[in-house]
Length: 234
Image 1 (cartoon, rainbow, N blue to C red):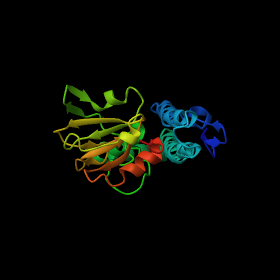
Image 2: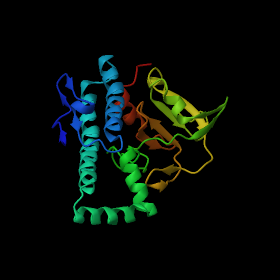
Image 3: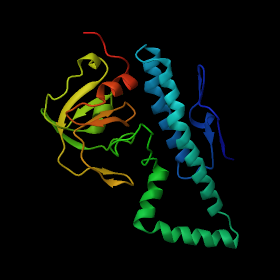
């Protein structure tokens, strides 16, 4: 069975996990989809309930997660076809297996099954925009830390990898954590590979990058407002 809800939101009713999509249980993808649905929706719902963001923020839940599940359903249908026992399906399985032994196809398939290649459409810009933030080993002023440690409190993080003190987000300081740190290694993204190192990234509570920029701060106030509510008057 392969089914998907036409809409993940109808007023105050929101669907996630198996209520939103069902498919052949291949590779644990259904569990991964459901967990990411919940993580994507959870922080948005909390901000709306607490009056931080307008209700329209909830519409981004469907916009982001519906295409992801649609693609997963498409691929699980292909996996189902590969498991048929007729001679033509066995021949197709052999061809796909040969391709999967090559580096590039294997990386692409692994990214699809794991969900690590998900790319939300947040506009044009750096390849990192709309993608999952890598869990980098950072050097901060007081101690070493990893990116995902910063997300344990489920709060957004503005990670400044340039000159310390280069950002002032006082109007959002009650909602967004500002961290000055450095990273010396290569930037690698699943499937995409190496990308240009950014100077700063705004990371949503679900681990996805909402803004990539430099010390010019172009677009940062707009991104902060869009995802984490209007600035607080000072």
